[in-house]
Length: 507
Image 1 (cartoon, one colour):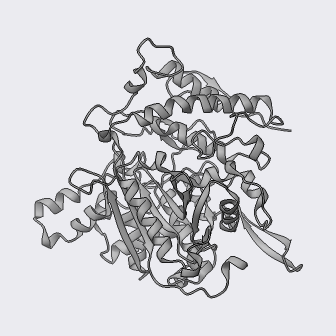
Image 2 (cartoon, rainbow, N blue to C red):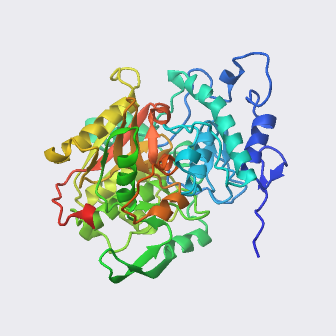
Image 3 (cartoon, rainbow, N blue to C red):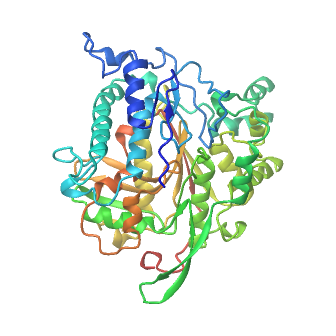
């Protein structure tokens, strides 16, 4: 018997609906003063959204790794800006109202099936390849077509709002790795400066559970038990039967499929991809984010698969979140970025956000070579926007790490490590770079907030793809429209040389 979907509640009133898009529509019509769904006489009403007042910037922390639980009495202290829980009942994230459309678009992308392609493409509203008619495939249920139309119509107005945001309203990283490095060298600074950086941080930096001593026991036990592992028998390309472990929040072998999809996309001029052993690891149902930890796990998956320097520090399977918390605390014990303990009050057994300083401390304590890059377009820095600096760096990273004979190929398959990318409020893992024929540029990323879509899962392992699938690629692309909304980025890349032990792209 199929369990009916649970009612989703409006965070502002008693309204409920089983349809997440209807709930979003309700919030726009009833609780957004300048909603594009409400007819206004003034044409610029959309410019007066519930955004920070002039000169005030949203408060963010270095990265997200949070789990927004079901505790009704916990609120996100964001200084008055508009936050709301994601309407998706399985997400359990607190989303800023400015990011809600994009967040729901990615939920939509993770649910797409492979049949939605080419002539019936249901590319998402901000996809670089737009469908000719914008309609859903004719074989999709009518309810799905209505929901897609609402999401697309909502986005058309939101795009105007996003583009109309001033430079002062770009989101920033509130505590950067550079600040932390400065605070740990206290002997070189005045005591007053050092102590000011060492004060205990609050909800605006550490998330809604900034002051908890321990996460709920049910969640702790879930993390302690780890993801579900099952064993399946599969026939390999050589015809032999082999046993494979399947972990419920890990998807290996995504990169070889992305390489094929980039190759058959006529709008792609050239693409570069990292080592194919990198696994897409994402949050489990109703777990919340823990995104910083999940991105560490993805970097570790590369080390394990490529036998790269540092892999011996980790077990054969992916280290769990609780293990990573122990390693970070041990790094603080060694004096590495130890001011973070004062700022966070400790992270062991909690849901506090972590960010680049914690990732840096972990790798440094294990002797894993890495490099940190910071991109910013704050006043007094380079005139180039932060997202342009980021895209330039990533392109140079992949070009420098590819063999000369491969650099002219449409898809360059490298053996480079993936990259940890921190943006205000969230972190992702960069697995590639894409240059479009129209001049647009995309990062290709694994986002731990979203699971692998059914469309991607259906074509995993195939080597004969001939039909473009923009709706599958959408979940992995991050272009200038999304990236230019932030003023700061931090990037952590593994730098130890690692000669390929085997032809990884042929396995």
